[in-house]
Length: 156
Image 1 (cartoon, rainbow, N blue to C red):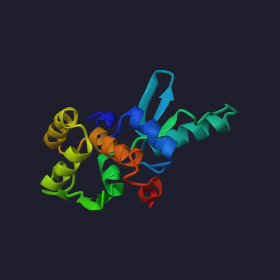
Image 2: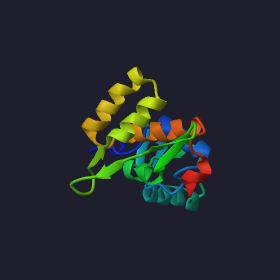
Image 3: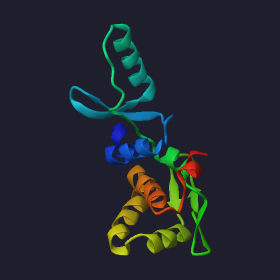
Image 4: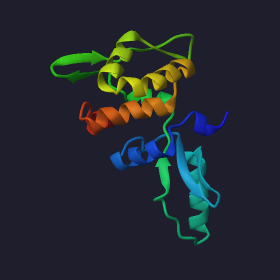
């Protein structure tokens, strides 16, 4: 499995950095001579430390958090309030670590908030993949962008 399969995409990672989210994510997107790739934060920090020790100038502008599905799930709120009505996120674990099932209430929330035709395919894909980090990061960014969740609440 490629690390890009378990982490959010670069576009979402850039937004998370702008918002100051996931500063301690396990993985990061970073740019090397071949372009952007996902790597362990610890490995990237060791590479940067080695460059600094050898007198090289290092820029960290091109390093972005790459949260996994589990990291995103940890910060998603349990509910949002819209027009005085609470919509609950009902994500449940089943069968141990690494499997998730999207419950009906969650689908209802998504269908109320998003363009139904556009997102229905993504929800179906999410259900098939069980936990797609790009779908989860898109949900989180949507909630923030539409002021249904505050960045401070997500940061905890």
